[in-house]
Length: 106
Image 1 (cartoon, rainbow, N blue to C red):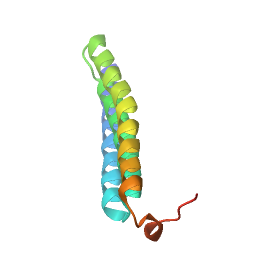
Image 2 (image 1 turned 135 degrees about the horizontal axis):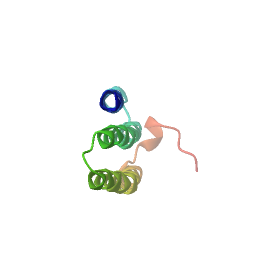
Image 3 (image 1 turned 180 degrees about the vertical axis):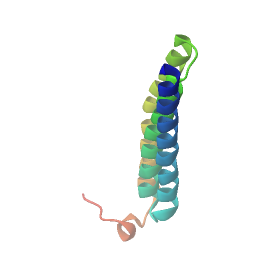
Image 4 (image 1 turned 30 degrees about the vertical axis):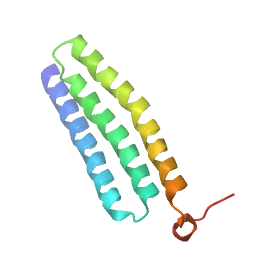
């Protein structure tokens, strides 16, 4: 009984994580402006991988694997927003026609 519950919980979380990543991928192709695309990619990447690794941690054979999944999530939650912010800052700095694509507050 407990094995079936773990299997169902793992399957639901894996499908949910893959769904979030697929919606994020659709958003990357749907939006036209680079900063919007980056926002969708960063949010989908962070949440999709978190849900997927949470599902995998329920089916992990031992506790050290769960700790490794947790460390991967912590690294991604630190690295992904920082990288997205730096790339967005580069776009704002280098794009001379930013006012044509979006409203810029000064």
